[in-house]
Amino acid sequence: MKKIEDYLKLPYTVELKKEEDGSYFVSIKELPGCFSVGDTIPEAIEMVEDAKKAWITVGLEEGIPIPEPDSLDAKSYSGRFVIRVSPALHKKLSLQAKANGVSLNHHVCELLADKSSIIDTQNRMIESLMGNLRKQFFKLYSSGAGRLNVQKEDSTREWRMPSHVMDLPSPEKMRM
Image 1: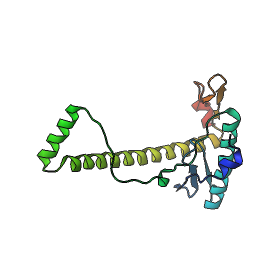
Image 2: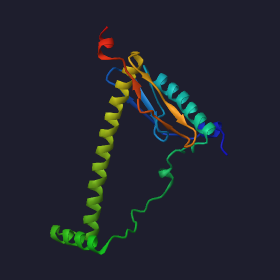
Image 3: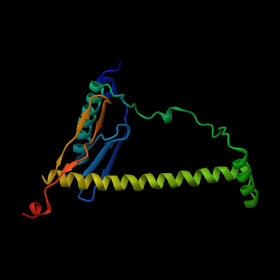
Image 4: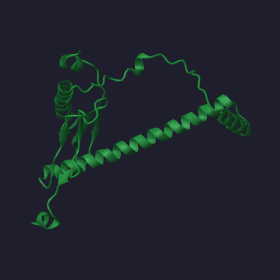
């Protein structure tokens, strides 16, 4: 079993984004929910390193599997792979390719590239929305307007939010 020191030596992917207010949002790609915010890049990096250590420590203590850094770069890609499809899909793709005057291989490559670009765009949009949600959450939480309650269910070893994720004061109390 790996120790925390072993995980801390691994080359995790650090993602950094400058926020509209000038602060820096930084996260560890492979560790969901491991993020921090700092006023400067060095401060944000230092804070996310602390968050990474805490994330891994809790995971080890609770017996939760710790993801390791992505190692896609270590593989060699030839540009070839075999895929099996239904006869109906094979026919449909072949007819589309013929109608477009291209080979089946070329047509499928174009479809995959288009779909991959769409997925990348959707992921960027989702990440942007999540960044905005995190920012709003931090503003709300740091303002003292709400109290976050998180509880752990021992039987599943998973963290779950209770049904009342945040206890917010009534609008009348917030105006005071």
